[in-house]
Image (cartoon, rainbow, N blue to C red):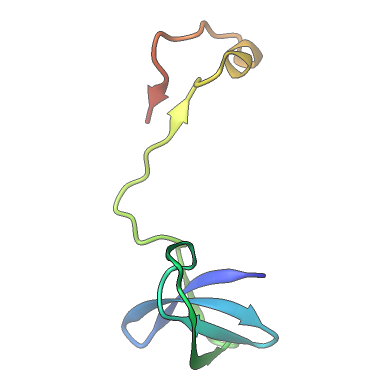
Length: 81
């Protein structure tokens, strides 16, 4: 199953790919979004980034093996970036 965030008019919507069209959902898939009767052709569909988040936080060197692989000491706390 392929999910995407799509531009529909001026609104971001989530959809599930079915053949050559997107079946639009009433919300994000991870928030329980359910199928609607709305469809959008794949041809010409504008795909958006998966999330509307304003920032992304990542954690690095958060387990010993990773530090060993990188040849770095294990930090007292994981690195956030």
